[in-house]
Every structure is written in structure tokens, then in C-alpha cells.
Image (tube, rainbow, N blue to C red):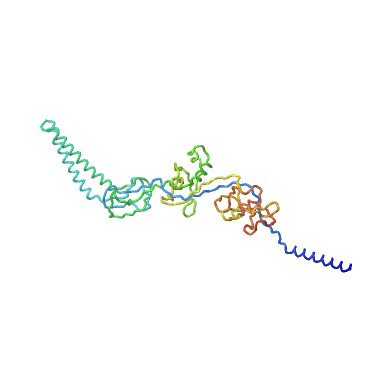
Length: 368
């Protein structure tokens, strides 16, 4: 009896050892993942706004008198100076009228000259002389009006600038009522970039600017960047000069104008670009974008707790230009450890072996 009991104890012990060994073999191993410890850094945020470009002046050139285009002195895109000839309208008829009007002036002057001595000798009354003088003045006025029409037929540039499109050709009939202008002259020595910001953005911009008064804040604002339509940054920095006095009643936005020097005439009226307004931030929490997850309408970071288990934490972020990092406004604390490896694979509650890496190696992976 004792022998059977002893054998049963041995078999039970063997069975327990076997089960324990099997359990140890099937338990998943604790994996090692890279984590970074949260600290603070300095960065610059760039708020971006689509913008339209215009020169200092964009002047439509129109005919003041009726006539056919006789000469075109410029080409599209040509740079011109103030007073330079642009167009000449046909003036043959006006020139003939001017000749006849000039002859009438001469005849009226002869009549006045003939009557003056007669009035002085009291041969005729002053009324006849005054009538003759009125006729002379009328003749001169008619002649001067015709001369002005002839002068208006020679069209000159009112400003220094660049010639726009030339929609009309030689022989086209134009008048002061013609809807389409002859061309447009744009002074692009300086370019204005026009864009809009909503009320919240306007408040954010102005509250982050130095200065007491509104205008002082504008004067002390950081220079802005202009990204051109080809994705390249314009070489010159710009300066915000004005905000509209009130918000647009329909859109709730404020119109803003920034000024850019354009000495090489690279920028032209009618162009487009993107304005970047920088905001310098100090002692803020920065995390890699790929260390976060987007779940529905929330941004999530995976924090490793004191027991080395992964916890999902909602965070509020702002994107840093370049698409690689976020500024975290809330959700994380200094010295928190967040997962930067295995994000999207490791599930909440997973036990890991954290491998702490220097955050600087995440920002600048090429530096050692």
C-alpha cells in the first residue's frame, strides 16, 4: 500500500514539472522596443496661407479717343519707363480737322485785329469787337480740343512697369467705351501678397506679436516667407504691412497684405504663392509624428508606465512644418516615456522591455 502511494506521488510530481515546463515554453517573450523620455525643446511653427500676388500698381491702359490702332511700340512682358510710347491711333481725320480749325482761328484773329482800331476811333461799337473776340475764343477752343484728341491718340505709359497682354492688334478700332483695355502696365518693383486669416488666427498672430498698439505689433512682427507655386521659397523675406479694419461679414476673415522686394522682377502680378508666418516657441514638448496614432478624431501616443506596460494616451498637437514632428499642447508630461518603435503593432497593456534612446538622435538621425 505504501509502495503504491509513493509511486503516485512521484508520477504527480513529474506531471506538475512537465506542465510547468510546457507553460514556460509557451509564454510569449518580453520584446525590447525603443522609447524616448519626454523633455522640452525650442521650435518654430509656420502657419501657411494661400496668397495672390500683385504689383504696387496695375494700371489698365485705355484709349481716351476713338480710332484705329496704327502702331504698337511694345511687346508683351516688355519692361517700360514712365512716358514711353505704347500705342498710336490713326489721326488722319483729326489732323485734317485741326488744319481747318487752325484756319478759323487765324481768320477770327484777323477779324479782331481789324476791329480794334475801328473801336479805338469810335467808328464801330464795342459790341462788334466783343463778338469777334468771342468767336476767336470759340475757334481756339475748338482747335485746342482737336489738338488734344490728336495728342490722346499717342498713348504713353503712366508708370515704370511691365507690359501685360496685348489683346488687340494693328487696325483694331478702339474707343473710350471699349471694354477690354489695350494692355495693363504693372509696377512690380515691389510685390504685394494678399491673403486671408480667420478671426482666431488673427488673434493668435497679434497676441503672439510684441508691442502695445495694434500697429506697433504689426511693425514688430517676424518677417514672413513666400513659397512660390513651384514649391520653391522666394529668396527675399517679406513684411506684413496691413490687416483689414474689420472682418468680412460673409466669411468672417481678415484681409492681410505682405510686402516683398522684387528687384529682379521675378515675381509678376497675377501670380500665386503661399505665405508662411513663423511663430517661435520655447520650452515646448515635441514628439515625432510617426510616434503617434490617429484614431477617429483623436491623436494617440503610447506611454510606457512604471511597470513597463504600454498605455494609450490622447494628446493635443500642432504640426511643425516638414511633416515629421508635432508640438504637444496637452496629454504628455515631462519625463514620460513614449514608444517610438513598434507604434501600430504594440497593443495597449503589452509588457515591453524599454530601450531608452536620446531624443536628439530622433531629430537628427545622421548625427552621432
